[in-house]
Length: 252
Image (cartoon, rainbow, N blue to C red; front, side, top):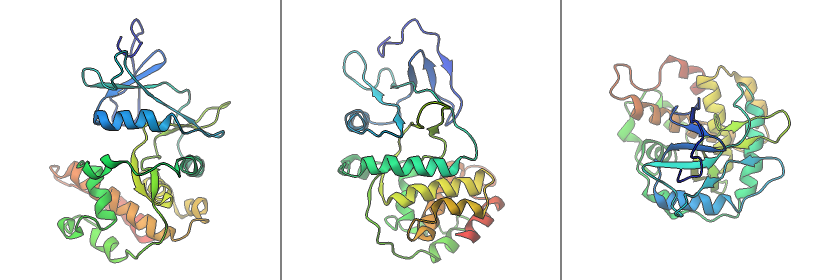
């Protein structure tokens, strides 16, 4: 009711952490972000527009807040995730990032302490990699890291499952995960995900052949995902990256 969806029958949505629900034109999900970040998203993304992509915009509740009883909301956008459309995901990500290029760095990035924030800092040398030397493949990847000169800006660091395609409308970008990194890093995360989890092979590199120093961004993307994988599974018997990572690491 607070987000204007009272009377609608909530329907569970697939994808992500499987915690989102659609109620009419509203998508509800647990609010795992601070009020500061939710408000920043609403303010910032309302200023971003592009003719070849759509966005799922953050919704405010009737009282102006962005979370109610532990839930937040975005508008529902039509479309669905489609497998193996990596080149199109990378392309729409590049258009989205061009539209974000003038947005200043949000201050809350420095205060994040979740698994993804820690892993991103390891990938970029801001947290000592030695703390994670036991993570499979990490020493090999760290040994191959070299400096990159590309400038950083606001990026969506989790495009892989968060671009929805529609037969008649431009692709829609949902669930923006903000990071302050080079745009090629965002594309490299898509490639890393595709290589490790989605059955891609070296032909996916055709989609990023125009990106300078892409190998270095791919190495960092794999470090990011490997450390995150270990943090999220460290209590399991076989925690962290398994054998399926070997081809991607070798390629990088």
